[in-house]
Length: 176
Image (cartoon, rainbow, N blue to C red; front, side, top):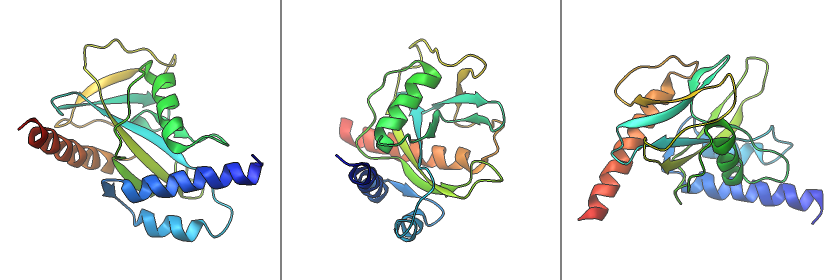
């Protein structure tokens, strides 16, 4: 597969997952369609990990951004879903199955001097008793969804809460 074909496969996966995402923020789907017309900045992928009761979320302490979901840049030739799973393992030590439906799609700039880019948020459900590992100097911790945490992306709290409520309702309906 040529490099151009590999880039196209990654973009096709990103577009498919953006269309499937349960929640959309920042008019991300329209932004993606426009961005596909030319060279695009790197994609970002993260995982919104909740406990089975959808009461807690797993975050990592980033040295600049504060408490954020595990995630990072999609590497060349890597699909966003694969990148999300890799980042989750690197930053928390967890190997977790990502839910089929992405949690959200958004557009944001991860640094003041970077162009906005597409971020896909995937979801996983993990028992809080599972031991955490991860990168040195970037601890992972569980936070109650109803508490505040320091982050440069304060809207994430509301977005993750909405996702957890939606997920809990779906799981409750499925249990009936």
